[in-house]
Length: 211
Ligand SMILES: Nc1ncnc2c1ncn2[C@@H]1O[C@H](COP(=O)(O)OP(=O)(O)OP(=O)(O)O)[C@@H](O)[C@H]1O
Ligand SMILES: [Mg+2]
Image (cartoon, rainbow, N blue to C red; front, side, top):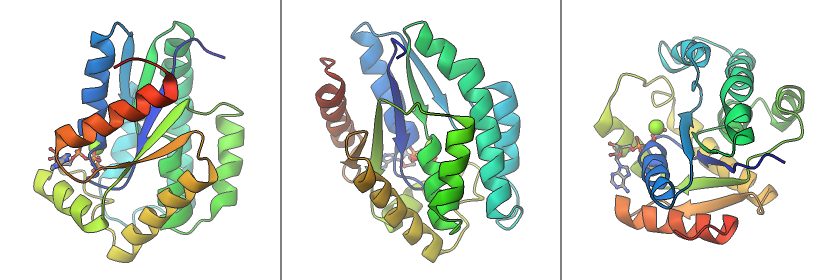
């Protein structure tokens, strides 16, 4: 096992992942932990190029399998050139999304099913898993409102229909139920500070670090 801890944040559009990863990275750094903050898709120059293909353009640009393959291609590069070396060096890696997003979006949202995503995971990632996954849980409408208020142009997923986002929401909950040891659902309603306090509690309880 690598000496660093691997923490991932998951959840639907606008749940607050990008906000909360930064706050957690700050408190971990202040408590003396070496932290690397990264994101998926992306996190490396090549991965960011693939990200551009995935987050921009028409919603129907790719079919679900092509999307899944692009995500796993970017993930392979992310693991090889950033995540594994950082963990091996003792740095904690916090990723804004990881493989559960592929399961939720392509597996459940686009209804590819669990099996192809599990098979790709086994092929590309192997046996390793994040030490802790925080699934930020906010009602679909609240998340979409937050994301719409931000409007950064990366709207390809936000533009998918309501039914898609409902499947996504249910998918994240099923993922959490299947792996309760790794995945913790965090109530992401309320203020940024309230959610951050819940995140700190989960990280402290799950990883034994005093924050
Ligand atoms: N608890 C909160 N209450 C109100 N607004 C919030 C809260 N958390 C984040 N926001 C705001 O909502 C918007 C979306 O938050 P953020 O970008 O962190 O979500 P995200 O989960 O990363 O979204 P995406 O899936 O689109 O990347 C931002 O403008 C952010 O400032
Ligand atoms: Mg984000």
